[in-house]
View (cartoon, rainbow, N blue to C red):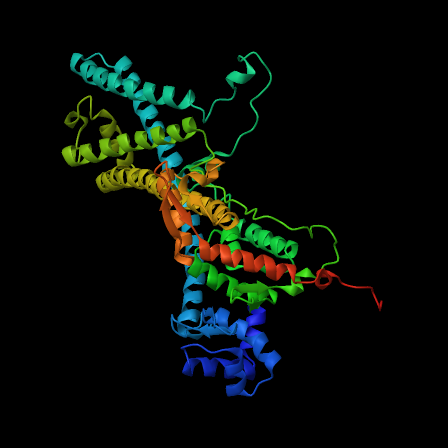
Length: 498
């Protein structure tokens, strides 16, 4: 599509048509363009769709049945000019920074969550062993009391960590589903730990990322099954887009797939794609319904809830140690002798003494590296999934509403004479927003922005919407399609083989 746009935009004829539209934004027909540019009629008809796509034209029909191209939003290119070029450049820079930032952040997460947890466990284990050794070798009552307090405090912390770690789903070698330990069958290999962590923080991608391709395939199949013609409401039902957005999209389709807007006898705008009918395959030519593909809502994570829970526990352990070292660093500061610390601050005193052998002043390292950094990481590690969860709920609601819009638009198009909000039924969870009643009303309102309905109240007190103008448009489309010969879809016999 981009190659086609560049080819067209470099032509003098394309520039001449753009120049005319810039001076006459109120609306011009193809005949007006021919008169003002002296270009051949077929050339103008071919190029005007590219202009309509690039500059987001609005297409209307005059009383005589001619198409009128206007630009109510201004004559600004979506593909050229400083704004468009800067937007694409910033987009590429943003994507590159996103990839680099995500890689750096993922490495930092692994280092912090797992690295700090292992590091804190090793410190606790070393302090516990030293406390045990000191308790066994000392004969002094004061010394025994001091070391015994440190031993009790350290053993309590380490016992909790060991139980939490070795009985978790992260390190267990055997699974209950495979029996006791005497069995030889091992649990099936699961996801690597780093992928499970990234899944908890960042998610696992978008399962509906291919929805645009599937929508395009559905629209093309519908066009081919309906004699190469599609209306804007049908396009809206297949893509789930509203009127103004669908109008811009179908102009892009005309430029990309060789389509052409035409007017029926009563002035209804339809879009013909004769080139899409010339297929070698003979299947799939029967009239097709509005079977729009649905986008799959996104999941928070592919991990189990228990797995994500353990990540929160591990992060909480890191927070506990970080807060412990930070508080004791502020409280105790520089330690000259081990008499300055009691049972509760025994681990801090041991850590201070251990790092004293590697650096002249370990206090900044303990306060920042073992205190502030884990606390900050705990906040980020918890805040990102929470924020992503909140945004994911909103995005999934938007996805479900768009899916419901596809079903609702198709229902209204097929039965425009009498529609009730309760008729729009979400048959699958992908079409079921949280507030289904409000979603149904929103779907009808979105269609009403394209075609204003008449309102009435039935005996049950329900509001009935009658889209009489939409019904007229549908009847005109059926008549228009019936007048198209099926021979347009035939390739004919092969008359030459190379």
